[in-house]
Amino acid sequence: MTQIEQNTGQNTGRGILMVLAAIATFTSMDALAKYLITSGYPAMQVIWARYTGQTVIVLLVFLPRLGTVLRTRAPGMQALRSLFQFGATAFFFLSLGHIGLAEATALTDINPVLITLGAAVFLGEKLGPRRLAGVAVALIGALIVIRPGLGVFQPAALLPLGCAVCYAGFALATRKVGGTEAPSTSLLYSALFGTVVTSALMPGVMQPVAPAHLWGFLLIGAQGALAQVFLIRAFTLAEASVIAPFGYVGILFATIWGIVIFDEWPDGWTLVGALVIVGAGLYVWHRETRAARIP
Image: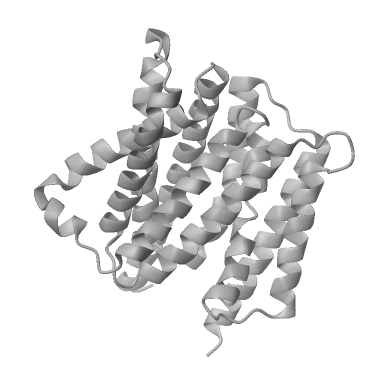
């Protein structure tokens, strides 16, 4: 093995560890959000804390070169990207007061196949019958989780699907600006957008924070910022095609947090639906990776 191959292998291993750390941090943030929301705080107030905390941290980190980081060649696309990310966060946090953490995460995880569909519709990428089949199977998995018409469906189950759609839009917009914008610029603008929007809404929804919950409101912004750092570092160290499948570990983490913190045990059909969604996502990832390797 050459030194270059050895270094590549080490970087890939570190990249996988970084993406696992990002997922663990993101899902712990989701668990904390659920704890605060089920403690009686409005979801929008929790979303405000998540974005405001991240904005403060990001501004402090980039303060020495803030002027450079704020420069963007695509202000419209940055605004659209930030809107999609805010929508994904809002839909997901709004769902947490009504459905389990594992169910919400499983439904959100249809986003990889939605990204594939969106790339074909909006970016002109090829979409063959096998990829379409992957999209269809993922949607079937979502139907298994929410089970409309069987007495267990509730409208709040549609909120994570809204999150998945917004996240797919966010990913496509990120792909569009990725070649011209620095990750630090995109990170800062998305944090600022969420802070401005939620701050405008706070006068109508803000509730006093009990001293016992102050730590949660301070921590949730730091979790969001740290998770973003882990994720950016992961994509720096390893190829996206290598670390993408590890994203589905989020369902496992969410299930663990749900059981340990909220005593939420997902039922058998939820697990079946989650496996169908994961299987469809991995199939689509495999097809895209294989197609990228064919000259």
